[in-house]
Image 1 (cartoon, rainbow, N blue to C red):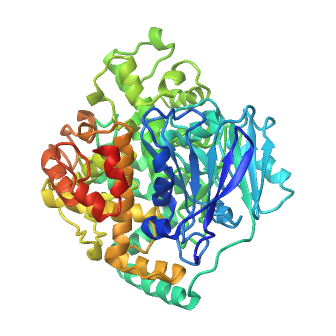
Image 2 (image 1 turned 90 degrees about the vertical axis):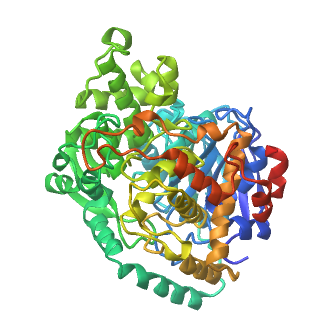
Image 3 (image 1 turned 135 degrees about the vertical axis):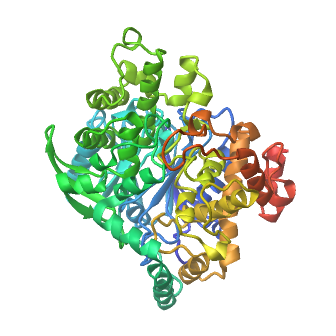
Length: 615
């Protein structure tokens, strides 16, 4: 079985038992690996009455066939479970080196079941497994936890994935951290670890699987890298990310009205105070790359403030969420708050949007100082930093913010149209009024409002995928064809999370991806069949969500994120969701009235067993 070990490790924290689960080649061919294979493995366990914070919620860490190979931009790993934030399919990914080290243990992944009666961490080394006491780590932040465990490993090249106090305190959007500030941030999977009393997973080893044809793999890598470098958009993106990190996007996206300000009510702000150039002018930043990455978009910043010598990042999403979304243009406070989010282990997007929602409600008079014990005025940088700590510790107003905007709206009797979320997941920092394709993606993404599983703004900025029939067009187009192209692009991005392959990978063509996968595995995929694996996993996740209670009515955006703005280049623009969604549903062969994949589509994708669960 080339490219795989053919097994994952199952750890039951309740019984302290471990066992190997053999992987079927049929499942690998159909779902490849990563999130797609995780969905296949978790499918029978995903039930509506399953408590996301209960011991029965399975948490799975997955690699894929590209992990640990010479293919560039393959340093990501995937984590999946039922989300404690949304109550539906939870999926997150992180870069760095942890995924490669996990695969080097002799396993393609690890599934954690049960709940320990005391804090523990799991050590996996070359096929051996130990469940070790972590009482001395409980209550500590990610960075201190990582340092202590690294020393305990005796200086060996172990990689550590761990939670901070946010996960321990069951913040519903707690993240799981690894390596140099890399975060599996979305969906609150850190809270699942915290509920299991699992502080960390430590991995190291040298057991990497063989590839089917190393010469063919090398030739396919060369061929795959030739095309994007000739495209101006790919070349310019590469250089921007190298120089400024993902924060390089901020000024361009502000011009495109894509960076939300004042809780999705504005799009124009003094971007020059907080963009990538400002970061480089005010702080020394060193590039950091994930495993096999030719770009190095991560940044290590010499900080020297608040007793902190160095910080990682911040990324674009973080700057926008803790900055303009909260009307905060103090760069120092954004960096400080970002570092705290990393150390405490909480998602910067959900944190920023939740704080901004609080400021919005404070301005409206729904929240008052007497009611919440503090002021929450727009742009109060000190309050933002303080609230990050309160959220992670669930203190005061932080305990309310730690629940996310959907539950905040319910608590304060506010319409869900004022709560910036889809299916419970806070909307990220790409405004759906700037790129109408993103509006469709947010409405239909398996995990809720997600910019990473269908970053359609990249397509309409010029990065089309011709052999997937995804063509750049008018970003304000509300047509059935636009909705259909979003579906095809989502299939490709779902494939990326199965390989896994970084969103910023210079390899985007399905034909080239098929050639790489064939060289690794010895299989016979082509562009069409490789895209179908992404479509298959996307539809399986849809079926999982339907099992968990999602219906057609949940495929919508709140008015706070769709009502036309009065400024910027998207002024007066509003996506026609009815037309866009109709085209999307037609392309997917989903029933327009119910949102369910048709029986014929499920049979075509080899998902016939799902029919009985949703019909």
